[in-house]
Image 1: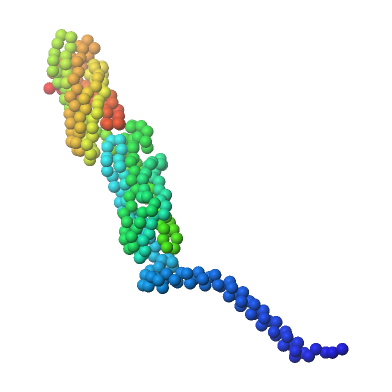
Image 2: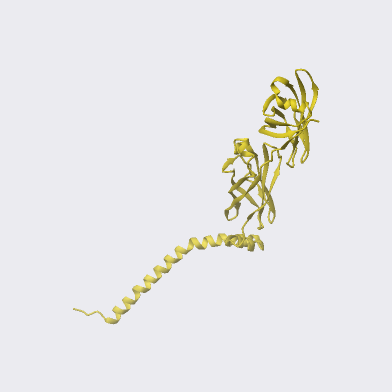
Length: 308
């Protein structure tokens, strides 16, 4: 029976770890091959673009990226019933390559109610190292947000919230830029009303003809159309007449007077008409509805007036 040389055994045992190491190195090289190919593909644009390759490297490394900055909110087309609102953003392209809007997801809420709003179209090109102004317009109809005129005009302002995102297509993929903005929209102010004058234009055995002056003051920075007035008149608490009066256009900050003619029956007018005919003051009350374009507002004005 032969004996194995101990030295040979130790050499054979030493060769097995060396073979295992070689196999491991080969496996590691195979695993690194895809990563090396990817690195080569990323490096290729640097060679082709020359100096702009540095900018591309910063782009890939995330050192620079497009920025979306809020600029302002614009209001236009004011009326008692609506306002045109436009949120303006600036998109900054810091790179040497053009960008495009790949997607636009945007919504506008007024007092928690979503309203229809416009946005830039996908595909818009942003030139290298340029800034592009982006507009998000919307028409806000006040009564779509607050259904009743009384509730609407009891508020000073309405809260708005803009949200969403832009997807900007870049050489390294689509970059998502968030949109988030909150603010307030002033509610138009109802005209202030004042019973300014009352006069007796005709006297008769059965009654008299009166003329009541209603002053309408526009407290807004835009013209307000008075499209009509449905009215009822009281003298000393007794209803003496009613009807419709013609309207007027009231410029910003101005006051216009609406003359309301009233034929009053002496038997139904009571003490109020008697006081006016005698030249004494009387309590006058005017109620009804004031037409302001497509908006109607209730009115109730009272004052003690002396006849002119």
